[in-house]
Every structure is written in C-alpha cells, then in structure tokens.
Image (tube, rainbow, N blue to C red; front, side, top):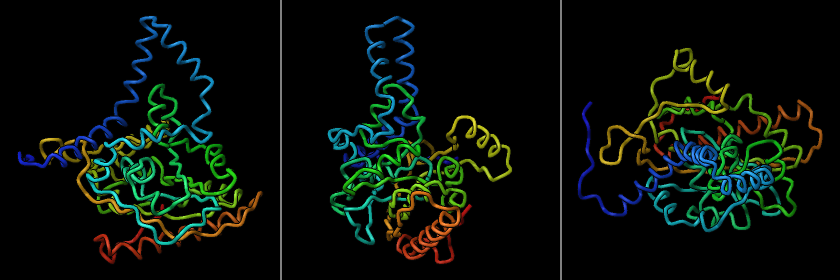
Length: 335
C-alpha cells in the first residue's frame, strides 16, 4: 500500500482541526475504558477517600441521564469544538421553521460510524443550531451503556447527551412550555455496520417505538438527513452473511453496541488511521410532520404514521441529494 504523507507546510488552523477531531475520536474509543480503569485502580489500592464519595454520589445521581442530563455551557463552548466543526466542516440546514411552543422528535439519519454530524450539530455551541432554531433545546439521545461508565458519564453529559431509553425520551417530550427536541439516531448501532461510503441503507422499517412515543406526547416528527456522514470512514468489507458480519451482529446482541472495523487517515499521512476523512457534513432538517396527541395509539395509527415518516424522509433525501453530489439514480434503502 502506497502511503501518502501530509505536506509539511500545513497551516496551523488545519493542524488544530486535526488535533480536535483526534481527541474526540480517542475520547469515544478509549476514554470510557480509561475512566473505568481509574476507578478500579483506586479500589485496588484502597484510595477509599476518593472512590467511596464518588460511588456514593453516583448511586444518587444514577437517574440523571434519564432526567434531562446535566449539560455544561462551559464545556459545550470549548474552543476545541470550533476546530472540530471546521475540520469537515459541519453545517446545519433548515428547510422550514418550527413552532417553539411545541416539542419535537428529530429522526437523525444515517448513523454513520461515530455519528459525527449529530454530535457536532447538537452537542456544541459552535453549530448553527441556536441561530436557526432560537428558543429550542436539543437533547441527543445515546446508548444507556455510556452512562454506566463512571467518570466518563460526567464528561459525556456535560456536552448535552442523554439516554435513549423510553423514560428519557418521554421526560424530554413531556416538559411543559415546548421548545424541546429529542434527537434520536433511529438506525442505532445496527446501522453503523452498513455505514460504507456511497451507501444509503437505513434501518428504519422495524423502528416504531419513536412513533408510539410521538403519538403519546403529541410531539411533531421531523426527518433529518446528514449528507456526508457515511463518507467519513471506510470499513472492512462485511456483507450480510459473511463471517465478519455474523460475529459483529452476535457481539452487538450481547453488548448492545456494534463494533465496525473502520479506518480512514492518520495524523501525518492520509492512507491509514482512525481520523475521519476531511469530508463536508451537511445536516438537513426536513419539514415537521403534525402529530395529534393520542395517549393510547392503536397499531394501525402507529403503522400509518410510520409510513408517513418514511415517505417524508425519502422526499427529503431526493430533494437535496443533487446539491451534495449524489447521483440522481441513488435512493434510500430501507431495512
């Protein structure tokens, strides 16, 4: 394999952007394990005056990720997130205004490998979210697994994410006064295994829990498509039925999250590494779908709204794909 090295005369800003993205990737790949390791070391060496107060506090704070989390504007405003945004760059595009007196569910697609667009747009103060949607607060829902990692959970919550459990989503959507947005990456971990460049496969046909929650709370549904999300990494070929895909799917069922074997570029060369490619991410927010509050929705009502959502999602993709270099013949594949 021919290795393409980065030129020596790279501007400082671009170096800082690369460093910002590298620290973000490493934080999600390694920081959780490091934090768990720190707690284990404290216990082994009996630093009880450190771990007992924290674990006691953790016991009483365990439900916070399901009760709106604990975001910190100081962390969300770190300059590192500005460089993170500019590396790709990440842009948020609004197609229609939203009523701040209502609550909404943003269905985010596709998952990609690491959900870069969702984090960049909804978990930092350097996206266009506040300018495009004044009066709204967005809550990115992620796997509950991440909030079971001591210490790491504090860092994660400070950026704004909350649990994707039913209780957590209901907490956000039941808040009075409106202006709350639950951002749910509907394809989940399973979809990340199909996050290959040039592919538009979405795991959505069996995802109906968000429909029932939307009906229960009367929350409007908004399809969101992040163009460029699947272009950031390459994966080892894992077609359905292959031994690798079989192992990945079994591990996902056991652990609750997927393990895509991805690669992209490195720090000093462009041929191999874990830093995503410098590709633009354009996250387009579609038209809201009105939802009448139905405390006890029937299966027919859920199915009908689910079909409407998939139709609106397909329309959103088809209306904007040409702007972002996607050939006319390409279409979404729903699984």
